[in-house]
Image (tube, rainbow, N blue to C red; front, side, top):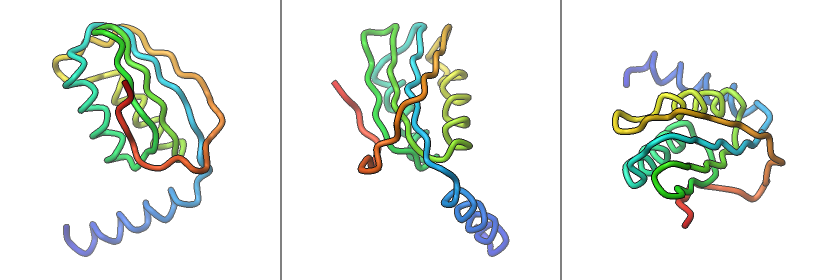
Length: 110
């Protein structure tokens, strides 16, 4: 990263730090390879600096809880709807949740 990139990243980080924290549960329905999709979701959540968790139920349902600034949650929702190459996301539902101020990190459940 050069100096201009560093400055852009710092400005974006500062702007997002001021954004209100929101939380949602994202349910994905489709056909997935659970192990690779869970890893992919964790990677995206960490890149977007979101806290929360992911849980696969079989190869057809994925439950994701994410918390952070709304623009990053929107980006996560878009990324999940597209999914990785080996996932066929057919349905997506998003429900608002109350943020948990003690929630940190992103983990795999179950």
